[in-house]
View 1: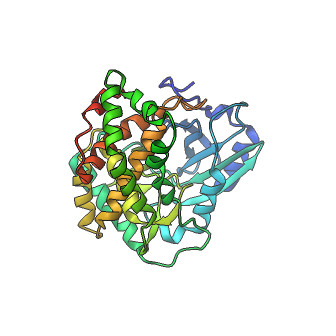
View 2 (view 1 turned 90 degrees about the horizontal axis):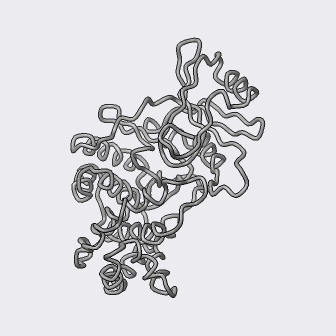
View 3 (view 1 turned 45 degrees about the vertical axis):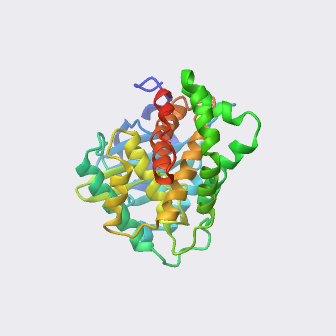
Length: 337
């Protein structure tokens, strides 16, 4: 079990010896230390490595899980991204050194970007990170990108409010997370659903120019090196509207005690134009996703996932309401972290 009492993560000594030996072969030096790294909410095997020649590297591994685990490894997708998209991702992504497959393990060996550097979010950090994020998007804005990348991943977020409206018992299920304010929550959701559904559908109609999207940008997937945002964890890389990536990042900053999402959007717009209809559709769609997911039981092996999603619902839904001219969902304050 981890030192924070949440996800179980293996120690370096628990990594099978053939895996460690192969990692040394790929890196070209003996590994003298593997320091376990915590962060995110999945139990991946993550280590900062110190090599005998003084270099450092990062090890990210997937391994056989107990039957019934709710964890789903997607490291094969991430490896494909690192192998094939390097020219589109530099200098924002870490350098890729290679991979290891042995003993049922699959590990990526990457540039070590150091320890946590953005929390707590300040206005200065958020501004610098956001402008660098916009620069990343600007480099592929309207550019031809590899055909194997998904083009409609963002459109999956254009259906959650419609599903909540359509399925019996869904509104009470979502409202229940507000506890004593559940009646107010249910009334607000019922009144807001037509507007939220129209807004989320606009996301599916977003048109080019598109960019290379990271699709999972939040504090545990980034580091800040002065004015450069370094971004890792790339399994969901896809092609789509930059406004979706922006909306997801902005609300995550707010959910962690940082500046309001509107300020984040303004900093981003200093670098790259933001299309308001696509942004509004993205915010509505993201809020719908968290409304659907936050009330669900925690999947086995991911005890903190729903807490993270509740906090992001508390950031994204009031933002969506402001953008759409809906009443303030005051009941959201009753939702526990």
